[in-house]
Length: 264
Image 1 (cartoon, helix red, strand yellow):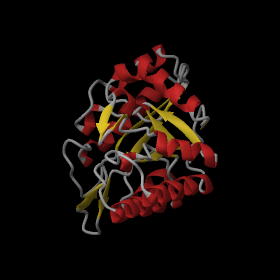
Image 2 (cartoon, rainbow, N blue to C red; image 1 turned 60 degrees about the vertical axis):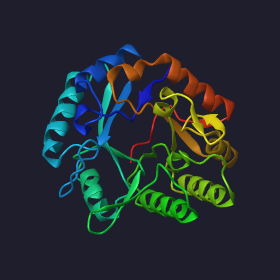
Image 3 (cartoon, rainbow, N blue to C red; image 1 turned 135 degrees about the horizontal axis):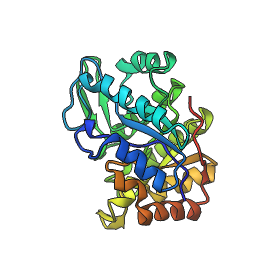
Image 4 (tube, helix red, strand yellow; image 1 turned 30 degrees about the horizontal axis):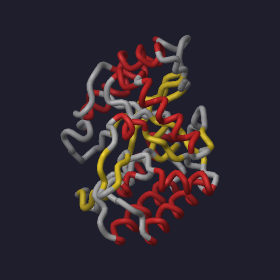
């Protein structure tokens, strides 16, 4: 049974459902004692409908989760956070949110690249070239080096369409894992990828993530890992089938699985 989850979205992102309190109630029923909300971060001066909430929703999100913290304080520890990209132009903003105590934590979700003009230039769900692999690596490591991310969500996201890792891919996996160890940023075994079922990647049939290629190396290198539900609906918190498969995956590869995150 899972006792904690730090990857929980809300309706504000545009691709999740349910009220904030419904997630809390579902988590209580599932035996979770520490629940972190980490919706896709709302960013000043940037709009991405259907992916993240508008910045005008920021205060409502903060107020709602803080209210739930107080209401359920005797039954559950609730944390307020965000899933944030490695958008370097926004690193000072991320740091301000943490250092001023507006939020409790951040998790890293490295889906895409943003340039200095706040334009998205690359998406990493369909990596096809070595240069894209190394851009993913560089962005991931630069974010971990800030010291403000408590874990790295679906760190193997870049492998979503890669059938068999080549030399460059293996190098990138190892360098990301080594950085996570050196910088004390646990790697997330993402349960949403399991809930989404087996997919055909080239001739292989597997989850898009978590991937055996990545986490076998993470285990070999001794990286710390954490399960993340990546819940986009309250019922996904208590999906026993997917949660059990995630636990069995972690056991199969002998992962160093944390029960709770050390919040940065």
